[in-house]
Image 1 (tube, rainbow, N blue to C red):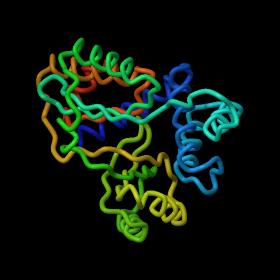
Image 2 (cartoon, rainbow, N blue to C red):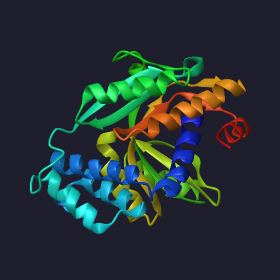
Image 3 (cartoon, one colour):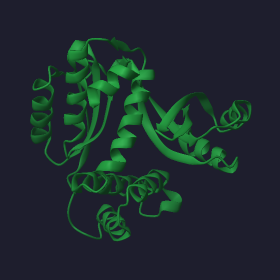
Image 4 (cartoon, rainbow, N blue to C red):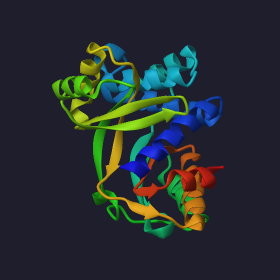
Length: 255
């Protein structure tokens, strides 16, 4: 899971820089709308909405915008009624498998944008199911460390965790990703909160069952450029790929 973890860390760091961009706020708004539509407008009884709000606040999303998105999701305001969640799959340079989750009101537009982002960077958009079998959905709670691993293991098991791994949250902070079945994410989050861990992020994430080692510098640059291009699309909510890459090669490729 190393490649996916490193890319997740880069995305977290990029998110702090990009949070002021309107497109980032638009994605956060859509996430809140869909969460509200799925589980209702009360964060106390809607864990998906609660985590979406926490993510939005961490990115500096204004409270008025959060309230407006909840109102749209609950039908109190018009707009975004046609939003639907769609999963797309494809291949990057070197045969890397890529899984994309999008929220869109126009499937044709989204597919065309994704196809262009793939093809311009040495990849191609595939058919549904072409790579999905290589990924497994997991709930992930990221906590800030350092921590005593024995104590963490005890709290994690109590919360229904399946595994955990060390991660670097940013240049100054280390932590752990604690993984569970998606249906246990709220229980795990509550258990780690009750154990007084500092929680950085709570999300559902696709985890690759195997990874491809990327060692070619040209492939690395094209791959990361493609990942950025996909992430930058307004309709895209998340991008996951099954690559592994040495830290120095990744650093050189994103510089």
